[in-house]
Image (cartoon, rainbow, N blue to C red; front, side, top):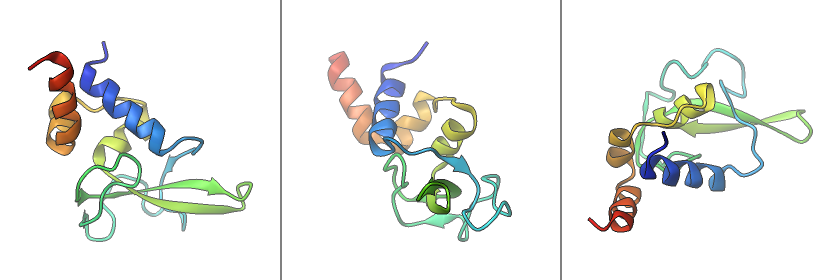
Length: 111
């Protein structure tokens, strides 16, 4: 069963990636297939797909220009899990990486 936090996270992910088909791996080749962090692992930038805070990033890509070109994305581990397996991150991970969503869920629950 999907929790309130998971529903909020998936809504944000879908809004930020509307119309985008994502797959794991670098647009430059399959050498980085989402199993190892890219660019030294840590990135000071937010996740490209869910707007999560700075942290380890993994390679993802999406087709562009009719599939002739590919766009690279830098995604967090929660998004890797979603892209690869369509599995929502657990509440603990969402609370740790998205305090704004945790606060919103708590407000909706009246806590």
